[in-house]
Image (cartoon, rainbow, N blue to C red; front, side, top):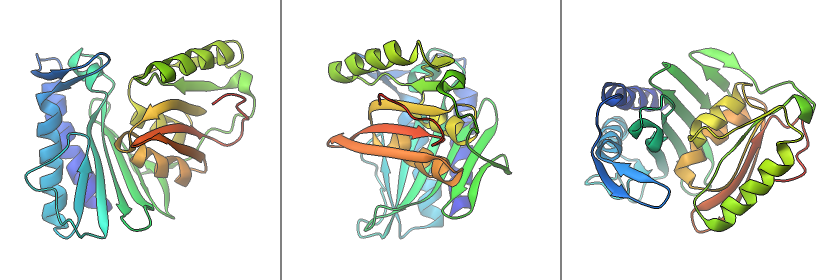
Amino acid sequence: MIYAAITAAQAAGDRLRQAFGHELRVTEEFAHDIKIAADKESQDLIYSILLDHFPKTRCLGEEGDSNNPGDPKAEIEWIVDPIDGTMNLAHNIPHFCVSIAAREVKSEKILLGVIYDPLRNELFTAERGTGTYLNGVRRYVSTRTQLSEAILAVGFAKSQESIDHCLKLYAVYGNQARKLRAMGSAALDLAYVATGRFDAYIEQGVNLWDIAAGVILVEEAGGVMETEEKAKGKYRVCGSSGRIEYPLK
């Protein structure tokens, strides 16, 4: 299954690479987000590749319903974020990715994750029990043990409550950590934790498709994932190396 996910992620990534730097059609606008036509186009492409390889599976994606979401009685479900970092892409900021995970429907156990950054040509992959890889090379979480040495990714979610809490995180960790980052892609934040670039990623309100692939990447790299469903479909997340204690999450 990992090869189907890689094929789909790279195919969608090729489309996004071609779109980068060009004017993109905005289809929806919100207070803190937008949707562009490439979101739906990328998701449809991913679905078609995954279901062509595994027709008895089903798909769950950020862009909602599809003409062919797969088998409703499937035991395996693909979780797809066709563009994680849409705002970055739309504003020609070179930091976005494709994220694909597969999980068992009954147990909700994540089996594999693939995150592809098409501009850097970085492919992050993990399968349960086999480790985490970046472009085929085994990678692990950071070995840093002091908060004063840590680089943390702290994401801003969209609700007022989550924004207020995030500002508290910045107040606390701005004085304690080496650096803070808000990069605009939850999936890449977790991929960076899994490969030792970041020491932790903390956010208050993300969707399953934002983090599903990143969860297994972090765990298979030796890290720790803490997730709590705060509202239907919205998760509080702390993914870290597990070597540093964080007083506020």
